[in-house]
Image 1 (cartoon, rainbow, N blue to C red):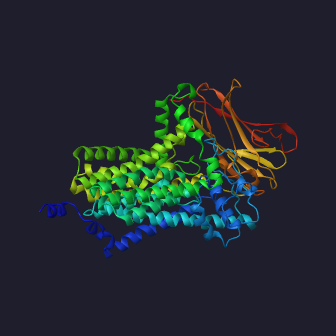
Image 2 (cartoon, helix red, strand yellow; image 1 turned 90 degrees about the vertical axis):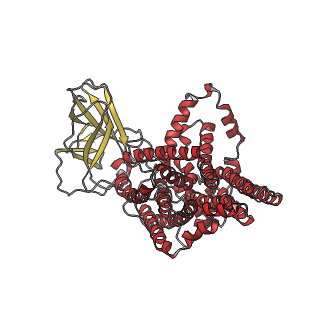
Image 3 (cartoon, rainbow, N blue to C red; image 1 turned 30 degrees about the vertical axis):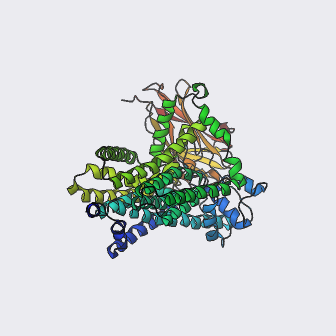
Length: 614
């Protein structure tokens, strides 16, 4: 009698899996996967090569595998130069066959870089991107975009696992499952990392499959087949990226919960311990056999640094302040931090994320207090573990290296499958039943709209070059000053008033007299009537995207520069911007000539008016 009662209230594994087998699910699921795959291709085409964090190093690793038929070997000069040579190899072994038939060049040449990409308002791009590529450079660019398809395909396929988890958690609410799958599929940071060459894509995809198997093991009880599957996925994750170490506590918890449900049969206990233990031993043995991994990662000094952090004399930040910075940075970058972590979308997205996370946390707290039926509560604990473990691992790394900003969102994304479930779970707890369907539709629509809006609102503007103007273009304030023999400042557009403590934007108009052979830097200084400096900017033109060697001759364009104005500039006074070109980063100022060819100094002054900030 008791068994029949339990069956009425707790769906069996068979009934929980029926939504996945229904023909009614195939079409919408295919539509979801197709939209996710297509959007990943759009991101891949819009993001210039090398503009994903460490993408040049990841691609160079895969290229080395193709060219040499082996993993990077210590002592090989080419292997030593690969910045990501310490990474586990599985992702690169997956990418290598896909690009093997393409021209990858005889030697690897690092991309030309923008030296100002970390300077905030000096630009976002890591590399310089000519409008037209030829020869090997063109072939390499094509290979990068082909390699990106691997990331796109594996991350898109992982959506199925998250949908399957949600169907098992809420077998009677298919709309809730779609909401969780939609959140996961169109999560902004996940979309970006799934559209570049990076082992982050594979580790996140494997974590979704891992989460699905862990949930099944917990809900169905111990099964040697499920345990072996979980162990194999965990081993693959460890051979993909080392932050997969954060999945080990979740594997142990899933094994414990599955064994507890079966009343601790000795054969199950031994089988579970053997499977998990042998997997960890084999994975660690393989990693330890890779010299670069052993040399760069397995360092006892990291543990020593972590243990010594308790000494306040070793850091300029209190532990509380350190944790506050770490969690804030990790919380924001978990949602979206594009490029090399220096490009963020519109601020309203972070407010929505904060509100949604806060509501979900309230709902989850309520679910824990109410102590739902035993099986859902176990699933909730497992999801919390999968999310918390990457956070704690990243925090330990940040403490060991005394860098609060090492709690990076991409390090935390193995917890994203669990986060998608937890968010829907928390909202579901708070929502009246009659509102849920409408809420899930809004969540799915919002996730899709955000995913599709980011390329237009964030990525395209960040990497856009200034538009060329007609040859007879006349600026609002025409000038005719020549920097060196190659570049002419032809004028500037009407500048706004300068307001202390605010940003000031100035549009300068340039023209290359002839092809430029060197990358010059633009240097702007905001000077008051007292001669003191109240703001400055050094950058490549086009916010880093339009280095002078990329300028076509005799093609004018206007370029906007942003300076942060200091607080002590006197209001209702006069000021000026001093414009110079430098012959390299922090180099010497080029001489300025008038149309007659006479040197008139090393800077051009543009007059401005200062207003108060009211």
